[in-house]
Image (tube, rainbow, N blue to C red; front, side, top):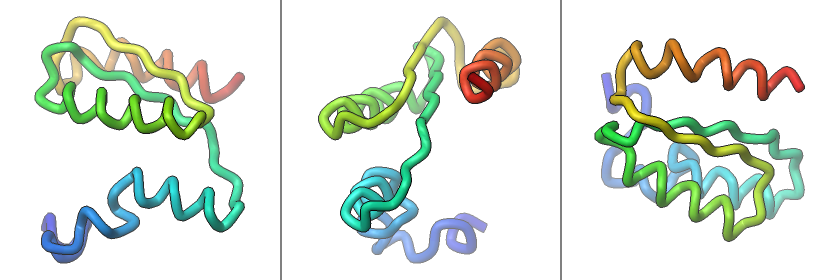
Length: 91
């Protein structure tokens, strides 16, 4: 299933499945890049990856909003932050 979604794992980091590559490609092609909302729990196993991506977006001067709070990669966290993300998106 992972291969169906992301393609060949050996090529993943250089593909448009990597959000940094996708962002750079859209920027180079002068395409519209929508604002990005990021929310992550401080106990999420993806926390460090989100920090790296947030730093990338800051460096690129991207239009994004980042927030974090206590929680893990589960519905307890998402139930709190999904409404916040929707509110941000609808502004």
